[in-house]
Image (cartoon, rainbow, N blue to C red; front, side, top):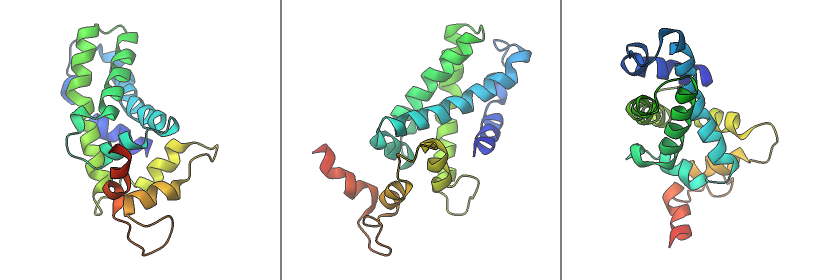
Length: 167
């Protein structure tokens, strides 16, 4: 999954990173790694801190630019770029120009049944870590609309399961 995310960043980062005079050529690869790492780390942090709602918001699509996942990944990426000696304003601009688009493409690919480059089960098993605290079946049931592990029993999916939490 991380390799596919790196490739997605490379495809999206040509102008913002590689062709950007604010990013020294010797930092191009590190900046690309920092972008994908920031997205991956953000997903992992959102999951481990129990912010399932933020993940659901990100993966249901729509206006990803304002999602908590994009905002957190952008801030993390900005910090990493600044740590490479890139001017803070330039770092913020680079993050704003690529992170929302990359997360949007990532979400679209994850939700596309004809695209196997990102699998939701694989993503959440990778970010949940080896401690076993996160039950992947709970989240896949949430996305698929199945009731608590009952095959074939439709429970309405993400929105129906979450609407009672926010009223």
